[in-house]
Length: 268
Ligand code: DGL
Image 1 (cartoon, rainbow, N blue to C red):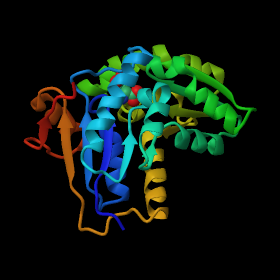
Image 2 (image 1 turned 180 degrees about the horizontal axis):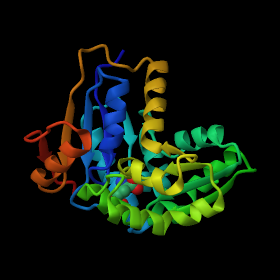
Image 3 (image 1 turned 30 degrees about the vertical axis):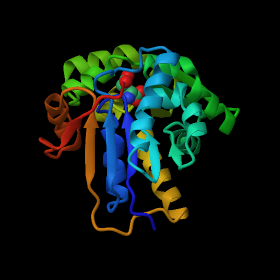
């Protein structure tokens, strides 16, 4: 048993989809969330920059004597995860492996789609992991950069014309490719599930990378005897830009009012 907190970081507020999944599975855990809102988005940046930002985020969380760290950002996990794994002895979790394992189990026709930021898709990390799990898998990967601002603005309803138009522009190729499984390889995309599903068709199974990873984290912490024995856990929020915009958007993401709960910090 270990009552210390779990640290979670993302480039912004999208990682809250992971926090929500984690808090639903392991309710007694204290979670410290860092959203690098001052430097988001990471998805259009270079590997060097993403690696530097990721190291600073991890160092900030490690300063809290946490028992484990979850890197909720798919972009960081795709291009800059290894230096983090090497730098810390505590369990540190990425969001690539669990959804790939789930997708390989789900697919019947072995045609899997992956969508994510430009950096995630050009890294080829999801493709490599899928092919490592099953060399017979056919992968079609598409960057969908406009999905992040759509999700942040709340343009996520199934009948939102702008969201549908954007999704059709990006995803029609996946439909034509005949995929039966689609990995949502970005923190924000689960918020667009209804739109994405409407465009690719209900017969395509969507795999949420954050939710899949949350299951892995919960199981692994239990196996390692690291779950908390305390009462219901609390979530602390840190951001690198003004808190008011974050709190409003995060309240919408989490469907819970977190106004007045975030603190602004500097990482440089
Ligand atoms: N958090 C990023 C990801 O999951 C999306 C936002 C960004 O580009 O920073 O890839």
